[in-house]
Length: 470
Image (cartoon, rainbow, N blue to C red; front, side):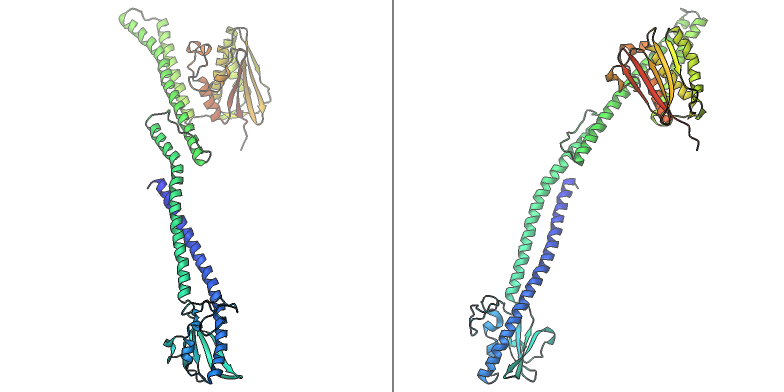
């Protein structure tokens, strides 16, 4: 069942339930008030007829023909007066007194001194036992302080007029419920369409996205939860599109990185097969270098894949910072000297130890230092600084090289990302070093970032938590 139909049915059921509750409460309140009104009318009517029967007994010197008196319409409740006011417009034989009661409301029974029914407003009560369980009012009929009979009122409560009134109230409630259901149906359709329209658009966009249309987006027309869902979908679609571009770039760049050494290997091997080139130590060294280059690229891709999956294996141990720095300064100092670049190391002796994989941290330092040296011109400088900062060891690698443009900074740690001609493939490297460095640092619980100004140099920073014994 569609969501719109469910919403419409839910609204109709809610309206019906509300109307049922309101009708039940209204019926109870109306019946209670109406019964109180009837009780007051019956009490006043009973008192009036009691007085009239006393006068009747005195005038007729007995109860002869009293049955016709009780059956008189005004006494039975068909009077059309003004409620229980004393100045009502009566009719029949009771001038000035009317009772707003329907036929059958409060039947009257007159008993003689022996308790026998001698007259009643309805002849069906004659010659029958007194219905004691239904008696509402009972009073003696007195003349000159002598009891000559007993008047009873049987509480049948709702007569024809009263039942007509209650029926009219019920019918009005039913009509109101029907109108409310129609209104709920109309508004349910309108509201369900407003709610399901963006969801339908979102569903259609999701199907297009699943079919490979990564440009699929949905308009965000509201600021509620549905609008937030649409915005989240757009963010997801944008992320998928970006990841797909990165995937394609990864495949293309990996193919390119592999193609060059493979072409060299193939060319040299074909030359050796054809006898164009003779096997020599120089040829063997060249072939070995290309194999090492391919092996390094495969290892870097594997490390990057493990880092992305959070499964990078770390052989952690407690290590002093000066030991880590020493492992990079010895090989790096020679490279910097060959390029006539000053290499400056600033590491205090009293830094706390860290619990890390030494080879991985050295790999991070060599990647960043290698980039710094690669893009620093002759006569420039590269500085390696370490210090304690808020429970972390903070490493800083500062160079005076070409720098990085502001628009490239956010992507600098993406795999195969190069910022321009100064950082092209001809400059060396596979374009994976910084991405791997980021994965290694984050696997140790630290973070890495960069600050740079174009033509002024770059500052790379990363942190590692200080070792805390458990």
